[in-house]
Picture: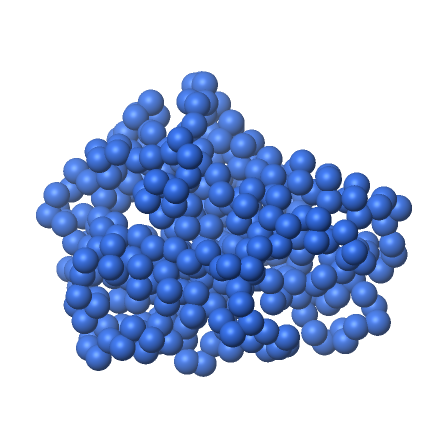
Length: 354
């Protein structure tokens, strides 16, 4: 039976570094527009203790999300050593399209995938390029779609990209703005006749009855600003509780489908949203199997890179595979889990053997 294997990865980490101390002069407000009683020093200290974020990366003014995706895609193609003209699908996962610096509009015409195909100068018209909007789990959902195309026999090579410039859709008066960052990650997924490697199983869910608007576009906390200009907003506590209650179950569903024992899992690559939340998800996941958490099971990049939405998982995977995160590696034949949660509210998980 055919399987889908990741043969190359790439990521782009923007060069502009913004440390927590650079928010000391910010004017943070409550949702009702009132000021906090705490100083920014205390706000930032509490923020770091919860999220783990010390600094994040922002894109240069001249780059848009499609540019970041192109940079990551080019590296993935080179890493996989494939001819770009042989790529059957380019799938670009994002949430806000291309947002120019200091702009108030997103731009998704043409699609970001088409823009990347243009930048790669791929002439083959049978290389189909399209975008998906799936919240933070978008890149992983793109990988799942690539596997479906490959298993259906309609594709042999797919390029999956996740990219975002969240720094351009944040409300600077909202302390949650410190969470978000920019970046891109990509991978090449290829056909293989060996079903012992590659994607072994997956699980995907969408919750919308109560959860659809846990992440949304809303007006600034500063009532003096244009109320028609919208920014990324979230109900943080509700997302935290939702993730803890549902992500471990999705991971278990995917793992049980694969037939792999929990003790065989060597790494869990989870969306870099919040350090405390990710740690709690892992704890609950292993509790479902009544097992202790193995040391070093969860690589982290959030401390230095922040939350770049769809880009976090592919970037983290690329960094580990390239040996760029200390004391973290994946060996041939090892089983890993990739999982994410985000706007929609969407959850997914993939069990993968290298």
